[in-house]
Length: 465
Image (cartoon, rainbow, N blue to C red):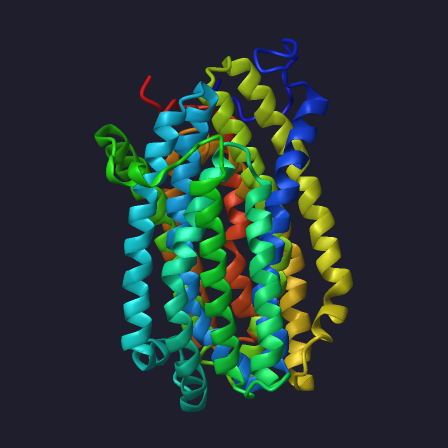
């Protein structure tokens, strides 16, 4: 039980849930592909903003980069709420307890609505103050303020739609999120083209046009998600009257298990905030190169996060259904064989295609050279991400040991990543060294994951039973 070996034990047969080796990979891909496509489409929305705004120069890119950081904080918190919903609801899905899933979704909607409203007010009322925390360059702050003020209005709609998508994901309706994201992409890209550059009779609004396009697309995304979940979905069959009947036990469960998840996402929001504050001390061309590296990081992370999310759904369903520990062990050993290969292939992809990716941007030669160096670092660290992220998120967290992942992230962010990055910045090391410090935890966490996974103390049933 306490061994750290990763050799797969002898199979005891298909088991209660009928999962052989072929079924493991089939289910991973069946669930991961729509989730990854949803994430890819969501990335394409931000990527379209970056590419089109990138035609306006380094300063415009830097302004959008700074302005998007509060949106990243909203994404982290919403992700925490959605992740908690999926963890709990997936275990109830294993038990076929739809009533509890319905109540969990309603509670999560109210929480997400409150979080979205808070950040909307914050962005609308104090955009200059927020931008000033993230950069000391007056020209960058001036560029980011109008973008931040307008995009802040989209936060309420975004948080609601993401929780609705999470509710469908918990019952394996994974294509729903992909379709919702597709609506957002089509609307956002079309409006970006019209409003940034002034096409088809629209005014040329530049950075403000990108924010306005995002706001409109988020409103339509929320309306589409709301109409489907409350009007057409048959698995959860949520109705408006369910919003007024919170289950006390499930409220407590969501608070108890959601607190470490949201706290963990707040840690990552703080890490993102520190990341931006550190990068914001560089010149506009280097900030632009960090933005490009961040976009590539998001692109490759999409595929792996989709795989990890699929793994989490499978793990939660196994635990909730009461699968024997021998079957869960086999599930874990297959995971530890599969995901390092994903990391190696992804790192090779980043290394080989970094030049083509950078060529999409109209940036200075100095920024392009720095971006190449950052992407070389990323090609290495992504191998570690591919192992530790699904193991800690898709097995440990989804399997029931939620608080461990928060504690682990807290230690690495505040005692390793941020201090080392600040020291590197103060020593005026090259940008790629600072970037390596910001990413070093992705490798170091692998050693933690290897030990924790193979002790199998993370298997916990979080349902009423």
